[in-house]
Image (cartoon, rainbow, N blue to C red; front, side):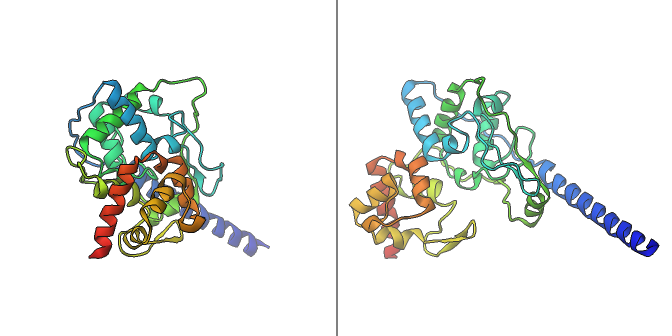
Amino acid sequence: MRILARLGLGVAAVAVVAVAGLYGASEWVIRRSHAVPLTPIAVPRDAVALAEGSRLATLTGCKSCHGDGKGAVWTPVDWREGQVAPPPIARSIARYSDAELARLIRQGVTREGRTVFIMPAWSMTYLADDDVGRIIAWARSLKPAPDDVQASTWFGPVGRWKILTGATRPSLVADPHGVAKRPADPGRYLTQVLCSECHALTEPRVHDGKVVPPLAPMAASYAPADFQRLLHEGVGAGGRDVGFMGTIVKENLHALRPEEVAAVQRYLRGIAAK
């Protein structure tokens, strides 16, 4: 009995050490400071820019992720995984300067210099300066409210293991790719900002455990009217169910203008032709 007791204590001790190591190593990754410089950003204040910022916040997922700005809880509390809870925007950005907020959006780095997780800065990094300014203008127009979601994101042991192994991707982008102004022909630009998180251009990609099709041959296979329907209604050619893509369209991509959809397809058809 003593041997079994000692064996049990030994196993427990090893487990405690392993959990402590996991917590310590993952906490170092979470709290590590990143020296990412700030870049000045011009934030417009006119009504037209504010309206466009609101549309861009829809397109890029700011509204759907953050509960229309009021905060949200994506996942139920799970002691193994943790909880994903995008914060209410007005409350979370109150201490941020415009330059700090631009860095958070495009490079995934907080005011304190830490990387965030899950927020898709790796696609938002392609946003042009003027569009970032418009999104910030929209974010600044929001006000804290009594019904804001006050939950916070935290990571359980499985969630921390995923951070250590890279399965949960840090949002850090060392060098932003954005240009000063949105291009006049925005096909390539919108593809990078809105589609690159999930899709590659010419090869299938595994995203969240599922194979997603390459963009260029898929877009080239669609008639223009069908492609418009796909990105405005989330319905594939011939009425085909497009799965999670349908959710993304209904939450975000439906805000694309018809001429923007046409520009995206024109760009992707050019890639497919090569």
